[in-house]
Length: 502
Picture 1 (cartoon, rainbow, N blue to C red):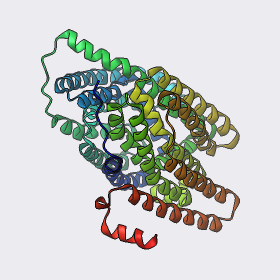
Picture 2: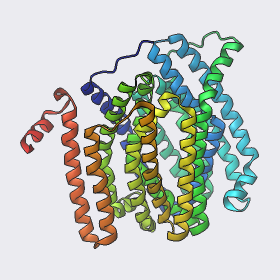
Picture 3: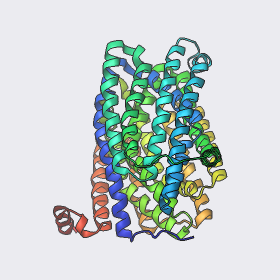
Picture 4: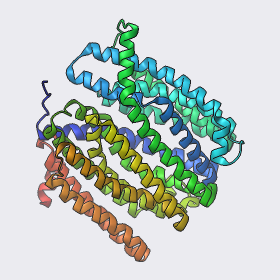
């Protein structure tokens, strides 16, 4: 087998940063749209309405994970492998199978959720009053699964610019349709707004997918069966992962709901959305561009490990200062995105941000398991993560209230980061680079210091410490990023400033 060569390190860092900035730029636009959308929903619905929105969203995520059978994720891997080998015919076959199967799964998934609306409503809310809303969500399942199949093709071919455009357009269209619906009809429009968001998000995904010139090849039933079998074989592992992840999120919302009511569920939903907002653009770029690149060279352990270290380094340097800023300015961020009614979620947000810092560190390693196609290992690590997350949430929320859900997320990633390192160490001989060890020794203690300061010191003292940590880590990240990139790719004004401060 001929392995594709990986570019030199400076070019790799540039590629990682470019793809991160493309997806990150679209995410920043979506952050602005989220401010508008979240603020409007917080004012119009209050914590109870936001809590109901989160529960409906969790039901929709689980239904999509079950009905999708992991086909969109396995499709990314299959298309990326074909693209890495330069096999246009295989790309066309995979694309055709992916599109057709996604359409069928969308129809079946929507019908399944509609059929189970009454028991799902009873299990989640303890009554049947929300069964009509759950029936409506079946339409959103269909739209989401069809869109996921189209996006998988774009991602497998590393169409990063188009995915960034899709993100922006989906966020814009979703904001345009959801706010008027909630304004006109209030809480009754929550389920219809989720359907409308899914429907309008399909439009740009379908449009950009159609720009890819893959003429449907003549395929016999046997050939289509082989393509479908290949998609389903790996897809089952992805489905199990998605089901466990979304199932854990659903279970934790139920735990919070039972312990503190709908208001507590709303506070959790607000903190969860904000905690993942900044880290989200790093993680999204990682899954969008990094995973296909890693899959293409997964058989070369040395290059695989180097690519993971380089991706992790860029991710830590970009995410670290922003997460520490969120830890420091949590009350202001909560007021900006929501309202004063949500200030009870500030401590919860800080614990979630601590967990996100560890998630940024652990995720690049986890992609080694995916790229290697180690389905059994992948499945059991997801099972273990779900058990730890839900178990800690059940324990902490019952004893410490809603902030315990954030502590559970942090505890999950303390445990998962250690486990996944041990696994990939055995799979590929992976070790953290000296640079990444240095970065971790700055950002992780700095995050812990800021959180501890807010628990132990007066507010103003903790704020000073937090602001200093933001400045120090921000300058450090800028300096490191400039050193990693080729001189010609760094603006002259930044190079000049770095030289003067050295």
